[in-house]
Length: 584
Image 1 (cartoon, rainbow, N blue to C red):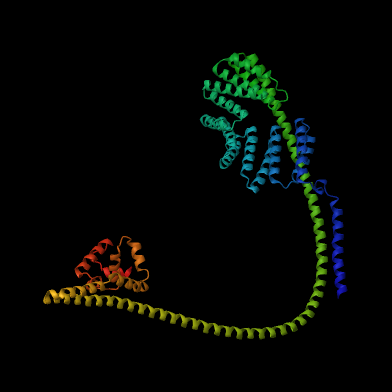
Image 2 (image 1 turned 120 degrees about the horizontal axis):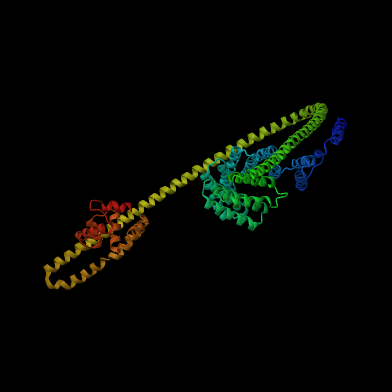
């Protein structure tokens, strides 16, 4: 049995090794871009170099070379696991393609970037991509689509509260409003952008805003504001040294002079634009085309038709050059896209082939392991059956022992419960006896309190009667009895020791009503000792006559003290004073 298991385990390890060897052979045939694993650092380094080469050949109009390096660049980018890096690289590429007038291709890349950004929920990237898409549509004169994406970008920047980016959105939307002849809305948006630019200065951006604002003012006939805006724009552009835009702004000044009827100045400025150093500049043909168009319009206005015709022809030539360049780039763009699609198809076929080979090998492996598993299962089943018999026997003995233990535990638990019950009953009996003893002590103290009070009352009552009898005797017997009676009276008066009686009474009272005086003084701290005595006697429900006998005063005096006490504790005349004291 053990030898068979060892043999099967050996087969289990040998088979995967052979399968892995076959896999390595198949991988050696795959495309080099998929066989080599690049680190993130390598991806970022290689992608930068490849993008530079792509841009270089695009500017040289060598589209075959540009296509070769662009394909390599995309292949490297796709190896990155950093989604944000991918998106930013796609945006760089789209901007380069837009500059070279590959509009459709640039849009395709941007929409792919949008899909990636949506998967990350990154609002800032989504806004940036929509702004780029708007720029592409704007350059391609599709202002409706440009407005749509500029607006999405603006809404995203509002959510992010990114004012510096909002300034750019306001400029872009303002330009669309200008093309749509909505001049007031355009001015409002440009002014918003200027306001933000004061908080986050960007000289180049501010120069562009003033130039755009000047064009709108010219269109609505506000020439003074237009001239002021043009000068502000020019001063900023001169300060930052942007030669292309400085030359370009001459067209703005020329158009301004044309509109106010200063035709000679307009002609001078248009020629100044044409004579400017625009060779190799990004907007060279567009700036020159606009200048030639301006000269054609000025010469037509002053009826110099020969010169107008010359500049109209030059305007057409430049327009055709731009159109031809765009047309050629469109052809290369289509070829570029088709080749890229073909390359993608080749890659997909290659990947499908790899998947098919892997699936076949996986199926073989599954069959092998299934057979091996069944054999192991059979052996394991036999082993389990044998072990099961031993375990059943052992289990039977354990169950018997367990039952005995359970019976013993139940007996112990029952005995423990009986003991606990007896202890509980004993404790309850002790508590009941203690409570009964406490109650009896309380009743005893109450009796002692009552006896002390009654003793004081009876003693004082007897002494009063004796004193009264002696006074009568004094009257009846005359002077001989006076010294003797006086001596007896002194002894009786000394027996009226009210303070000693009070201290004895107070001791018994506090043992029964422990918190009475403390609670009373807490509520009424101004009560005197005499008033406290009166409260205590009222608490044990003594009447005025009984209290008078203890205090050795008349009942009338007791009632007066009661009334003063009632006022001091602010008790209504209708309320029962004794019940009030009982509640304290």
